[in-house]
Image (cartoon, rainbow over all chains, first blue to last red; front, side, top):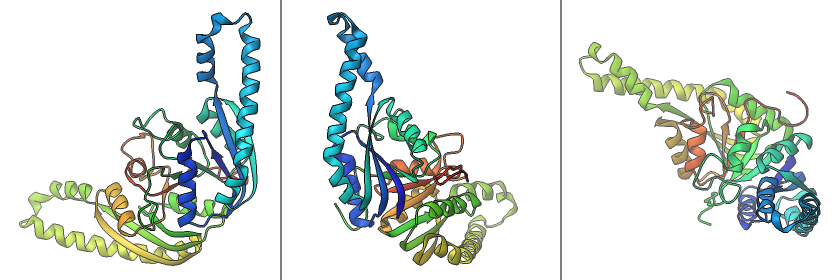
Length: 162
Length: 162
């Protein structure tokens, strides 16, 4: 029984599948899941700068676009709430959207929400990939004071081949 | 409920304390704990080489010393079985002693025992320490296909300051 779990998602399939595999081998029971999506502000601004000549008033455009992105991300999180609730056997799922550097926001939300566990994927956009440093998972691992469960997105989780 | 957990120990206090803190915030329930101690063969041989001039038959001495070390390590593991059983709410605790490179043996035993989770400390002899690469925890993380729970030996695990 995990009191409160932070589960960051970049909406890729890997982490969900890994969580389901983990659940199929270890029965999970979670009080609350904080389902977090971080919109990478650095990437967003870089993208916007590439188009900045097209805009008369860049800042206003950026705020509008950020608001639309936030709405879109929240919609996507809300669409996943029931599935996440089932996967984690969770009493409650709280969707949260943040802007910023993904690893920083994950560490920050873990503290703000006083979670008892952070669940992170080993590979994929957030995970280790080829490069060990620089990945979101590795930076969170180094910086957080909270326990971290690394679920393998390339996995043999026990209980035979999957 | 974790089906089968691999909990490597170097007999330092940090990992036990971290496991207890984790348990105090997240109720654990474990089918079986494989309590593993790896005697670092590289260090042992290096140590023996330093004294090799003292021995007439180095190899026989080494085997004798290894056997004594194995007995000693098994005694220490057995002395911890009850405490580990309570800490993890475990149905069963199986003590295992291995010789070799610690990270390699941890990855190997995880496969052999088909564990559903490996629990590792973030800091200390096995953990990250100052150097990120080279630590046992980091190497296991990179190499294993099993889920890994990193418990913070320098920790705020949720539920206030500890």
